[in-house]
Amino acid sequence: MGDLSGTRVLLLEGFARQIMPMMQALHELGCHVTTLNTSRLDLGYASRYPDQRLITFWDRNDMAASFNSLQGVITHDKYDVVIPLTDFSATLLSRHKEELSAFAAIAANDWEVFRMASDKQNTMRACVENDIPCPNTLFDVENLKDVIESDIEYPFIIKPRVGYGSIGFHRIDNEGQLRSVFARTAAEHGNMLVQEYIPQTDKQYKAQLFMDREGNAKSACVFDKTRWYPIDGGSTCCSSSVHRPDIVENSTRLLQDIGWKGYADVDLIQDPRDNTAKVMEINPRITASVKVCFAAGVDFARQIIEFETGRDVTEYHDYRPGCTLRYMHTDLLWFLQSSERFKVKPSWFSFRNTTDQIFSLHDPWPWFTYSLQAIKKLVPELRKRKR
Image: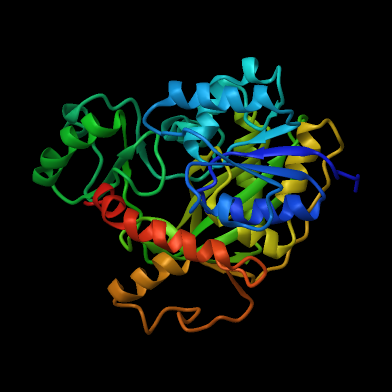
């Protein structure tokens, strides 16, 4: 493994949960870490790991102004690598990769590849063309009539073709419900993906991989989504690393087909009807649950820096199963709302070999500042996910 000390890294969006393991890992590699924040309460500002903390304008609803703000930051100081942490920043960097690359290595895929991966319909089409298991999907849905006149059976789901978490997700049980939500959801979120509803009586999975420039998987870590919130379909709040060679193989084939390079996250759901893990989407950015991969022994931070600075990328093909990650802020909400609270396995009360997405004894202050922010954001975030 090469020496990466002194590499100047800019981490965007200090409010994002995934910044916690990234900051620590980069700090331990000896990198000079700068975080871009919008508040002193952001994780990237409150943490002890950054060497420099910036507060600047950043607004997901204003990409042009956010780009201008970022451009001012990277032209004012020298950075070797810029790393996005959310869909918004990954989209911004990919869209402007060519012009930003004059100042630093941009850890984002080229725009055409990024667009292919971020659109769930494109992902489903790539799965169908390569015989990779995925839910039955209606392609090129433009309006309500396309859905009503199709042969898809109830229940099915609709969700934005481009989006994150469970925002815009609806389970549709009958035509009346479809008519009541489709137009409104499409107007709010854009083109919709329509596909069969897979019973959520089994587990969901994530496969996080790192692809080199030749299309080889330099690492792959699979973990299950034991619990998620909202409980009818949302983001993971408890997960554990597992060995699933079938998931690694299918995820690798999918990323190779679309020409993906670098870090990627593939979401899958285990279909209890045929016991097959089926691809749901690709997340073209570092996910909040990446910390479980670090706990299992896969250092994506090292791989990103090596890749973006032209070094050979370290391989991590073995990782530890049974490492558990919890996001207690929403796992508590899951406990309060789920009828399975005392039956779920592993037990909600088990903390064996477990780490939290936010809290760390080595870096405790971010948990308190994040909790203050979470309280303020809870109501609007729940409103976004209202069914």
